[in-house]
Image 1 (cartoon, rainbow, N blue to C red):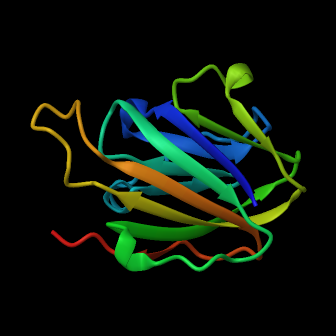
Image 2 (tube, helix red, strand yellow):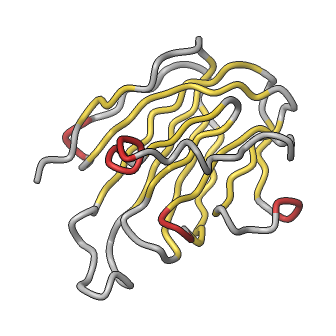
Length: 155
């Protein structure tokens, strides 16, 4: 398993994972009311992860050889989806990060399923600046799947 822990500036309450192709990744029309509500927007070759804060947030990416077991009760919200990586590199960045300097993880070109876990969504301060929210993304080779919510946030 490959693991990357980083802090991303979640400008506009989002960060993304995408294929290392600058021609993909435009999420502007993908952030529908439903996508904002479930904190997940998808376009071909790109996943947009919604966040609880418009600040630096901790993110962990784990790349597995097969689907991992995820304990849903440890998370506030869990979504799953898929995206294709054609270039062999996944870019992880905030939406206003400078693309050429963004973090990259090398992987085999393939379709990847993602299980996106959100924690601490109710920990945000009144001014929206502080909180204990965190985000974990499990990636593993798989088939294309419809985006679904495995655990909905209650409240």
